[in-house]
Image (tube, rainbow, N blue to C red):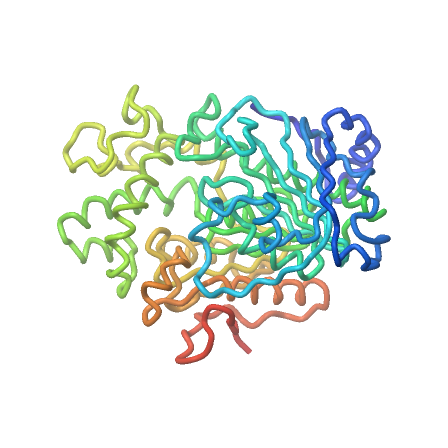
Length: 465
């Protein structure tokens, strides 16, 4: 299941690691397939790297077991939905209706997978985990955006929310499925916490490999590398900047999941919600961290998120709780033996497993976090606020609490008078990050960003002055 990365050392080590990967890339040719997609109007455009899909023959992802290359007229979802180089079901429900995305970005796409023994990802009929996607625009700006997927989704999950927008700005884009997918992800690994720990290694793996591929296609390493992600993907951004900061220049975390050994995490606030909500105990919900004003979101989250999330992550980190059962009993009533509704994290103490994936707040590069005040899956008072305190005031960090934002942007269509999408705020945060890193322009101070009384909330967000 595991693939050793063989990486050590600070920034100097990256050059050596990438140089070795580039030198060995030709050996990967046996696993490379070329798919030529006829170019149309974009083929005549001359890009800084030499033209449409220039150096396609040189592209070989180091360490990949299989890779399939394609020259595409459009790497954005406007084109890849038609050409079959994305899966819309991966990104369904992650963006608000009416969001406007760029299109017409020609370049190279590489799909493939790294060696792995788990088989939960069935995309392309490969039945192989550790699938990745690399997108290399013809008009490259010298930058790279690296991502892992939200939830337990597959590798195309960020295509609408992150990839389209980054590509249109000239960034190359690299993403991994994290090494396991689906609601039974906890089956991957031998020890509690193995599956989530693999997520972090796979992001590092795809980041290093992508840098090597950029050197192959463009003749130089990226000048800037940014990590970006949503929910579990946001957690991955935090972990990378805490533990592999030398690979990146900064990151944007959109409502990242908080894991830490002692204190708030999923397994401390979801069981109280599962006990309180069926009884209509509103005060207990508030005590568990769920925001006043978010009550209208609770029925949806109880039905679709809280119970399933608690059971599968508890199974990953504390499988002995329910004996030989897998992920407990759905919606079991309090008092039922081995019921996740009654799970007591502090009594069970799955500390060793959580320590392997836990966050510290000790980021080594600039980080911007955006989190909605009405998040009804990861309550802001028990997630974003806590992580901001962990980071503290001495590290390069900005934290924007988006008033009336919630965890699922697609819910905005049902409640346009009560919610605000986070997608445009994420994109504003990314622009603020790049200005911070590349121009030394400090972002607005951390703040709660109010919901505007008018305007296009789906496509605009001003973080401050």
